[in-house]
Image (cartoon, rainbow, N blue to C red; front, top):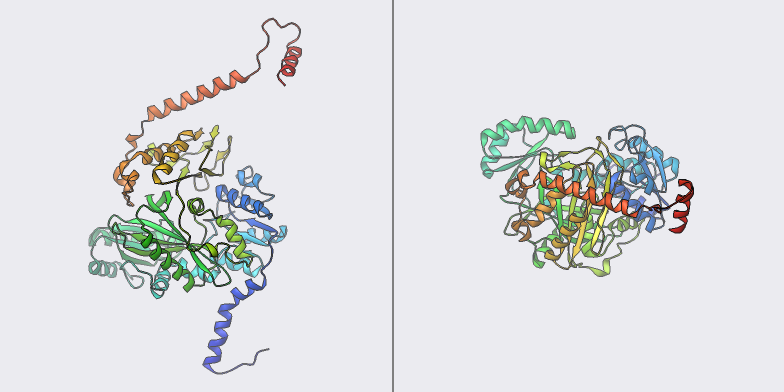
Amino acid sequence: MARATGTAAAQEKKGRARRAAPVRERRQRARRLRKVLVANRGEIAVRVSKALRELGITSVAVYSDVDRTALHVSRADEAYALEGNTSLETYLRIDKIIEIARRCGADAIHPGYGFLAENADFARACRDADILFIGPAPEAIEGMGDKLRARRQAKQAGVPLIPGSDGPVRDARAAVAVAASLGYPVMLKASAGGGGKGMRRVEGADELRAAFERTQEEARKAFDNPELFVEKFIVDPRHIEVQVFGDQHGNYAALGERECTIQRRHQKVIEEAPSPLVTPELRQRMCGTATALARSVGYLGAGTVEFVADQQGRFYFLEMNTRLQVEHPVTELVTGLDLVHEQVRVAAGEKLSFLERLPIEPHGWAIECRIYAEDPLNDFLPSLGRIVKLSIPYGPGVRNDFGIYEGYEVPVYYDPLLGKLAVWGEDRAHAIARMKRALHDLVVEGIRSNQAFHAWVMDQPPFREGRLDTGFIERYFDHGVLDPADEELARFVAAAVIRAYELDRKPRLPSRARGSEWAVSGRVHEGNV
């Protein structure tokens, strides 16, 4: 037992040892992973299970009652019921997931994205249960999850910040005072916000006063934290993020940027890598800045440092997402790396596999479209129901990360993301052309999807020329540009062609056949073997 010391220096030394303990413990536990539970659903659970199979690791799925027949369940080696349907009853239940992991003998848990992926309590529960969490330490999740704490950490690491309040603003009067010093427009943001929630652009003092309590209440309900802060709004902003990685051996690296500017209600819908705005010199500065931030918090695994940039290439820290991003496929397509493989290796205590390749420059161009079960003709409202016909594109340079199948019933309880359609091209023009072809080949019948909307974006001159900002959809899109009559006609024609094709392949009985229909059918079958 260590001797007690009364000195402040000794107490500080013990405090540093306690803070460092989680990393040391994980290094001591470094081992080959044999079984991993995927604490998620949909396309990301399918994608992670595929990666685990490639690594020779047994995959374990969990599922709600309505997800019993979901694709991610059939793609895993083992599957266990969570009992219930809502997220709160199932995929957000830390106790249920940890209990299943113990019962099935899982070495580790991969959280995917969303649900518990950025929940520090979940990461801590995994650590307490001696189960590896394939992600950063809970301390890093907490530090980066709170936007104000993240801003302070970014400032210490020398990362450029958007001008704003030094801390939370107490009330509407304080918010108006900060906004007056910054100049309008400003953004009112929840300190614990994320996913586009708890944030508003305001144009003047009266609007700010009216929005303050409303945004505060939204923050309280969504994040159980009503704290708000004020930031200067960047006019015609672009959303650019950098993929970072860290391992347990003190290695940190950036894998280039992604352009995520095409957004609807602060949610990304189209992503690409690299960014049309970013020059090699700007890429070097952004990647260096993102790596410095990851190093300053001792980050472990895959993370994303998000920036807002103006049209002149000046960039500012926005937030850090402590997980794998939805849009990670575009980075994989231009780097040739598998980020899930890398996550698993890092969690098992191995070094980053690509250190000798640094700095990694993007090869070609990749674009991803998020395919949602939503109706662009009806303000993008969710479209629920059964998928009666499904044909997913394939071919050179086309990647599909989908979590659905023909006959699948889209549930009401979760995000309506069906999957992600991603393409690679030799350059941006080639990637756009390939995406147009892939969208044309995609068939999703029985529900509405935003497929036609994506095809419309690919044809817009500002998009093709790379003249982007986060107001692109709001400025240019009107549901009238998608003719519902043309869409319905295309559906009917497609259905008729498919039916004709099926009838043409059906065996035909000889016109002069004699004997029972059963016998004749048997002879026809034999003749067609």
